Length: 482
Image (cartoon, rainbow, N blue to C red; front, top):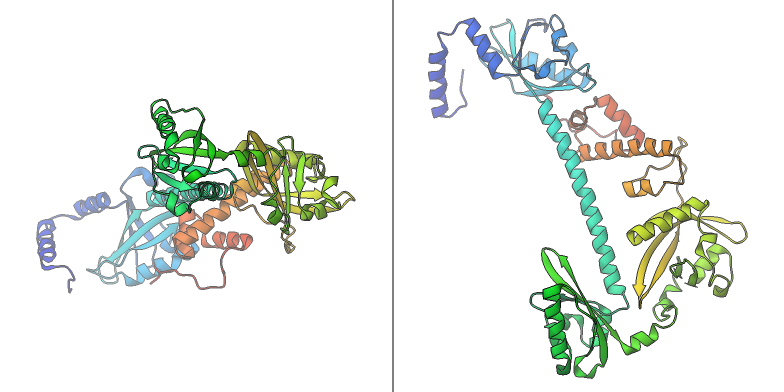
C-alpha cells in the first residue's frame, strides 16, 4: 500500500506497527474503544453486529437499539447516501475519508457523528470509528446566538450614533466638544461655526480658550479648572474673539471612548432674543414644504406649528385650526396607540417607524409611520413629530401579515394586538432569524444549516417555505457527499 505520509511519519508508523504487533484481538478492541467515542462492526450486508461506546455521553440517544439493524436505517434521510459511500469505499488496509452523518435520536434532536470505516478483510466485516459531534453542535449554536446578540448591539449603537450626529448637526444651539485634558476642540456644529465666524475645520484642533477675547481668558481658565477638580462649573459670560460679541457659556463633563470631554454650549444675546417666541421660523420654511406631515408641540402635546401635509391628513384647511389643540385627538385608531407612542418617547427621547393611524376630522383613517423626538431649547422642551404614509403592502395569500423584523417592532405592537398573537409571532421571528443566520454562516449549505439548527432537511425546507427564505429551487451546496 502506497503511503502519503512524510518519511518521518512513515518511520513512526512502522515502529508503531512493530510495537503493536503482539497485541491480541481483545487488546486491540479496548484500544479502539478508548480512542473513539463509538465503534461499530458492520457485516457484509451492512447490518450492525457489534457496537462499543467510549463514554457515557451517548446514553439516552437510542444507540442500544442499533444492534441487528441495517446501519443505513439508523440515520436521517439526507445522511443515507453518506452511509452507502462509507460502505462502498471501505477496503482492507485503508481508512475512508471522514463523513458526518445524523442519527435519529429519541430526544427529538438528531445525533451528529463523524465516521471513518476500514474493511478488516476482503469481503469481510467493516470496522467503523465514530466521533460524537454533539458538543461541537452546541458550540455552533452558542456562536450563532452570540453573533446575533453582537449584531443587535451593533445596530443599536449605530442608530444611537446616527441620532446623535443628526441632532448635533441640525441643532440650533451652538455647541463645542472639547477634550478635557488638552482643551482642544474635537467637534463643532454648524451653529457654533456661524456664531464664532469660522469654518468648522478651522475651529477643530484649536485651544477652546483662544476662540474668546483676551478679557475672558481668566474666567475660562477658571471654568476648565473647576471642571477638572469638581466635575461642575457655573455658567459665565464671555466675549468671543474678533469682536463677535458676548455669549453665555455653559459647560458639562461627559465620558466617551475611555476619555473625558467637555460640552460647551454657547448662547448669544441675539439667539436668546430670537428664542423668546414659541419656535424659530427660519428652518421651518423648508420643513413646511415637506410632503410628510410635520408637527411641533409643547410638553403637554399641544400643537405649536404644523405643515400643510399634516393639515391634509387631518382634513383641515389652516394652521390656526390645529394650533393649541392636543395632538392626541387625531392620533391612533385606539387610545392605546397614542399612549404607547408618548410613553416610548418619554422613556427613550426618540421614536422611529412607529405604526399607527391618523383620524381625519371628517372620518377618514390613514395608516402612517411616526418618527418623534424630544428636544430642549432655552429651558423648554419641544416635541417634534413626522408622519409618513405607510407603504401599501400586497395581500398575503395565507391571510397572515408580515412578521416584525426586530424586537423593537414587536414591542411597539403592545396594546394593539393580543398577547397570544405577540407570543406566536415572537416564536416565528426567532425561528426565521435563526434559519437566516444558519444559512449565512454555512454559505447557503442547507444540509449543514439543518444540522446546525438540529432539524432534518425536510423540516428546514418546510420552515424556509413558510417564511419565504431563500430559493428552494436552487441546487443545495452540499460539499461533503462523495
